[in-house]
Every structure is written in C-alpha cells, then in structure tokens.
Length: 362
Image 1 (cartoon, helix red, strand yellow):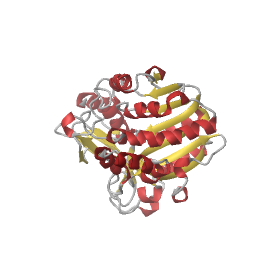
Image 2 (cartoon, rainbow, N blue to C red):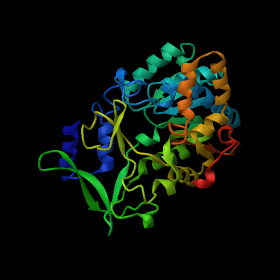
Image 3 (cartoon, rainbow, N blue to C red):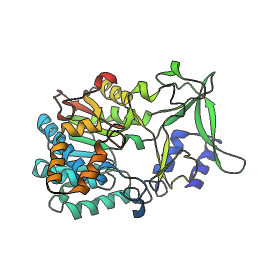
C-alpha cells in the first residue's frame, strides 16, 4: 500500500491532498484497508478485528432500528431497504429478520469484494429464509424507491484537511520526506471551513466534501423514500469549536486508537467525525426534508429499545442487557453517536425523533 501511495505522490509532482491519501489508504483496489480483507469488524480484539460497531454489539440495535424503517416504508409506500457500507452484514441480517415479508429486496451498496463475501456468508447463516432478497451493487442506480440506511458509513468517507497557521489557511497534504517516509505538507488554498472566524492559530480541521457530495447525489437519486444515517459526530458549532485544535481524525487497529494516519497505511482504519450540520444542509439544499436529528440513545429509546431490554431482563439474558447498555450510555455510544433522517417527498413524524429532537441545534 505504501508503494502505491508513494507512486501517486510521484505522479502528482511530490504532493497529494490528504483526501486523496485517505482514499487510497482505505479503498485502493486490492490494497486499501477496506479492499484487502474482511477482518475489520468484530466484538473482541482476540478475533483479529480492529473495531466494533453497534450491530456487532447487540442484535437489539437492529431490532429497534427496524421499527423506524418499517414506519418509513409505510409512510413512503416502498418495499426496499438500501444499506450503504454494510460491514460484516450483521445489521442487514438483523433488519431482514425483523422486517421479514415487509420488504421485497434488501440492496447492499459496498465497494469491497471481501466484505461482500462476508456479508453473503452472514446472511446465509443467520437469515437463510430471507437471504435471497439480498442484492449487491457497487454504485448508485438512476433511481431509488425505498428506505436508505447507513451505519458508520459517513465517517469512512475521505476528508480534506485544513490547517490555520495564524495568518492563513493551508490545505494539508502528504509528501515523501528525505527518509522516504510520509510527512504532512501544507499548501495555500482557497478552501475554508464554515466557521473560520473562530479558529485559533494551530487549528487543524476536516472538510467532509465527499460525505456532503454523497448526500446531494443520494437526494437526486431518491425518488420515493427516506434515509437514516447513524454515526459519531457533532453539529457544526461543536465540530469547529475553537478548543478542538487538532480536529477529529483518528485511526483504529486491534481495538486501539492512534492519531497518526501516515504510519502503516492500509493496515488500519482512518476516520473522522461527522459534521452533521453540513450533512443536513447538503440534503436539505438538494431537496430532501430533514426528519430529525438526535443522539443514538434517544433515537433507540424512541424506537422501543427499553421494552426489548425489559424482555431480556425477564429472561435473565444479562449478556444482552450489558451489551445493549453500551448503545445507550452517554460515556459509550449513546451520546457520541447521532442519527439524522431525511425524506424524499412529503415529510412524516418519524418515530425515532418523537422526543429529544435536536434539529434546532444543527
């Protein structure tokens, strides 16, 4: 992978923007982190995995989310679920089991052939009665009529880096140092963050141009339907807070985090938090209605997770209870993760935002 990136830097005249570096490190065919294997997702470090997502933690995540998706299917008169970046396939299995005959097709859009194979195995093992409904695509079609879901997909989209030296904004890119290692290198740029006036000298921050472009493109593709995205992030004022000097860029390997994306590219995940204000505005400006925005904890509570927990308590299934609590606890995933919803066409009162909607904070 390092050789591939070094060649790209040479071809570009000695410098590439960080957005291009992240794209290669994660998605270069056959070499990138998400292209070369399926080991990323898992609950325990001993499994060889690098991180865990909510569906791997607890099946109650998918069960609660399915209630929102079922309401959206009814409200939009559609019968298809479209999942972007389906990971291990755990969420797809949970949703297919919960929705059953309510859906005719479950479409997974994923660029990784290795992950597709893992998803196919997961569905065959966990929901054999519904696995035939699954269809895989590697891009957007001309039109989607259905309900879209993306769990931890926006954070994996490459971001541009900006650095403020106290006098001007620079785009942060990657070059080769004298010892042949990758180093950061800054160049003047016309790019600006949305809240540049409050930046302190030394600030580094991300621009999620690809994430916002994805939402705009989805808006033009979604004929009838809705979309829900779950990810870690903040509204714009928190994302670009003056005290967040170093930005949110982070790497993950073996369930440990490290802040240096230039070491071992292709061997670990590179991610950035989501600016949900930018995502919401991208969808709204492209014609979608914002259904709501709230924390993952509030969303799951609105979708009936407490009743599922009561059932697990009654059954004495304490492992399920403990795992599901991580979805809700503020110091775990409950507050850091947020949910934003969109509708194409007439909006509806979405179940997941019935209480605790924070749209006014975007």
